[in-house]
Structures are given as structure tokens and as C-alpha cells.
Image (cartoon, rainbow, N blue to C red; front, side):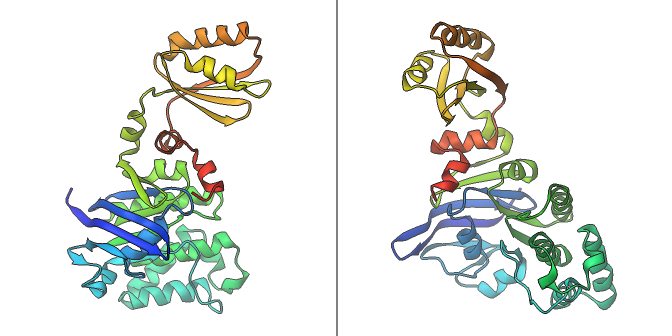
Length: 320
């Protein structure tokens, strides 16, 4: 596929803080690209630069052939944006907001009415269309924000935290609508810290950490790329000592050990069928009681941990 966005050396500094650090990335026409990382990774700053809301400190990007520095007006014509925090008039109703947005986007009266009704119904917001926005829950306000882009059907849709504050049933509804938007010809960039969401929706995932791009590929390729791709999670009755962790690291098949909690060890290893009995035998000999053992394939959380040494939750808590 040809690239619709080419990002080159894109950098943003706020004083001494480097929010986005020399980012190089291409977004293919017609794909859903997931920007995955904890809060503070640089995802929102990146998309605000692409949308010409803020100017880069260094580097640039071309969007649909237009440079974000030289042709910001042309770039803005291609975008529709769903902000992390809904941007709307607090005196308005969902109908007023979405209808006004459709009008600004140039839809005819007939098409506008049809599409606004269709989108609000799909988001389960039709019955709430005449309520004042300030009376809606956070999840409902997020749906109104999403409705603006779904009505617009832009060439490129940027969605920051697509399902923040939305319940589980609503999440799946939103995911299906975003897939349909892609199938109708839009390119989507999703900034999210939801691992399952990135895995479920994205054609490719770009993982960001501390302003840098760590890796970008399909979810399957990223998960398959982990050396020691088998995962064994062992829950011990008591906290794992440094001595027992070192003991387990001595197995040549064990590539890495992550202490998820004081009593939970996550082992990345090869030849899981052969080595697990040996590991269990060692724990029995060392008189280390095991509560449970679980074997699985890698997830995007494992990919993130592989590249950063942290789970995404740990990175979130530490502000990294």
C-alpha cells in the first residue's frame, strides 16, 4: 500500500522536556494504525502535530502530499479528530453538535439528516439526542465526540483513546464502526493505552515509550518476534526470593523473567513442554509452594515489556 503520511524526524520539546523524540514513521493509505503506549509516551503530542494543532520543534511530516509546516490548511482538510477529552458546546445537545459538524463538512440537508440519525442510532445515542450535553455521562459525551468523525467520514481519522469511559458493550460497538469507517476508505490512527483494543483493531501497531518509537509492525509479527515466545506465569504461595529467580534464570531455555507481582513470575522461554516439568521439579526441591501455573502465547503487553522492561501498567504508574 502507498503511504498517506510520511513522518520524518518529528520532534516536540516543551522546555527541557522532549515529548516526541525524532520520530520516523509511515502510515499506509487505508490502514488502521494503532499508536500504543502509556500516558506520557508522546502519542497525543504526535497526533496534534500531524493535525497542525501544534508546531513541531524539529522535523516535519507530509499528509496526503502536503507538508504540515508549509500547507497546514490543506492538511486540515484531510483530517477528522476525536479528542481524548470531548470538545463540545456545553449548552448543546448531541443532535445539535453532530448536525452542526455535518453541516460544516458540507453535507447536503438530506444526506446530513440521514447520516446523523444513522450514526447516533449506531452509537445507541438516538434516544439521548435532545438532552443537554452537561447531563450526559463521560462515556456518552465520548460517543458524541466519536459521532462527529463517523458522520464526517474524513480521508484520515485521528482517534485519541477511542473507548475511554465507554462500557464493554459500547466498546465493541465503537470498534465495529471504526472498522466500517476504514472499510469505506478512511485511514485511521488510534492513540491508545488499551492493549486489547490495539490488538483487536490495528492493522499495524506502533509502540511509543518516552517519546520514542520502539517498533512498528502487525500485532502478529510483533508477538512472534519475541525470542522465547512461550510464556509461563507462575503464582507462588509466598513472595519470590531473588535466589529462586536466579535459580530459574539458570535454565538455558528461559530467555527472560519478569516479576509481575512479588508472588507472580512471568517466564519467557523456549521449548515450554520440555522445560516446565524441570522448573516445577526445581521449585518442589527448593520447597517453594506453587499456587497456580498458566501457559500462554505472547500479548502486546509482553511485546511492550520485551522492549521496555516494564508492563504498560508499570510505565503508566511511573509516568514513563
